[in-house]
Image (cartoon, rainbow, N blue to C red):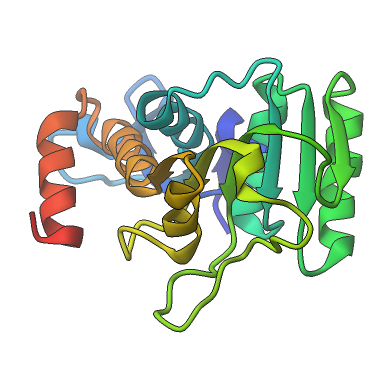
Length: 225
């Protein structure tokens, strides 16, 4: 639906940020914020992905997780899950276990990882033994009546060092609540939301994002503090 894809969108196969651009006097495409007056010529839309980098930045800064060589369990294989899986593989996790309600989607991601990142062992289903990271990319936890996306008859939270839930509201999902009881390090998706938005603002404005101010405004907006 956009005119051109940035390398980030091509790499991760999804667009979450669109920047409008026009040609300058030399015929080069430039973002609209660089033009002082009205735009007379053609305008195009360029698609970017800022989610992938935001995921790994939040994992490092909010959980202290280093992904190279890690064992990870990913719940969910929808749009967000696919981007997360590919980014984790690109960061060099040693093993990635994919769990999804529709096994075919998880299987397709495993095949893609095998083709693009052959050093990463991608497997379907729950792992045996400990993992460094459990990441929830499903929507289970958004509603008050939702249960955990994890089948604890298949995998115990006591076997996960860190648990990350992409959901940021409520502040603590059933999964995170249970993970805290199990002694895991935990974080929700507020950091991911912050960092993808900060990068989007930089793409639109050409200016460094004021991350501390954005963080304070974000937390006040979604949690009232």
